[in-house]
Length: 198
Image (cartoon, rainbow, N blue to C red; front, side, top):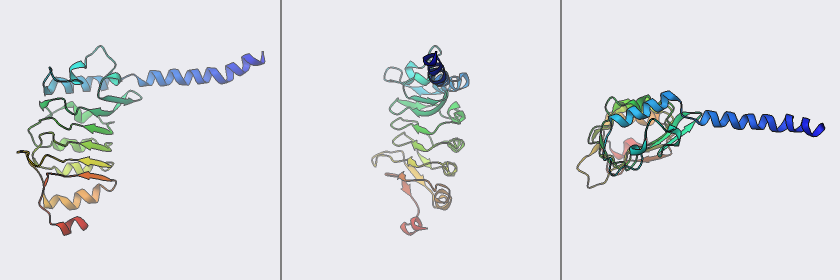
């Protein structure tokens, strides 16, 4: 009798916790919809893709390659080297509000960095290196006050050049107080060296 009580008091709550964790790991419907909408709007090479090409409605999006979830919400998205060449404008990517880590490196977007990145307030890690972005780095990136790592580096031989405008410096470094890793290799910086010290 006593053994049954111990079993009931210890193992049943433990089993319930495990079941709850399993259930909450399943992708929430709205999150899966956003990811599939993202895929449908991206222009990418299906023959060379190793992640996006396998995303479909029949699977649990938390199990998809490049995706990690917490309680069914997408918190990590790695679409690096997916041979993407467009489709970020008006993308559902910017509605994935729980994202903490985003990697779009080594693609060829051939566009400016969308200002809508500023909506992803929970981002801690953002890698846009060698992704074919060019033009001015939008000040909206500085709205991502939880960022600890920001990688905007590009190859020095790239024809697509990112520019960091002098007038944006103050706001960037005033807001991004948690940054421990900032990578700007190949970025054209218009501020003088002394302005980095302010």
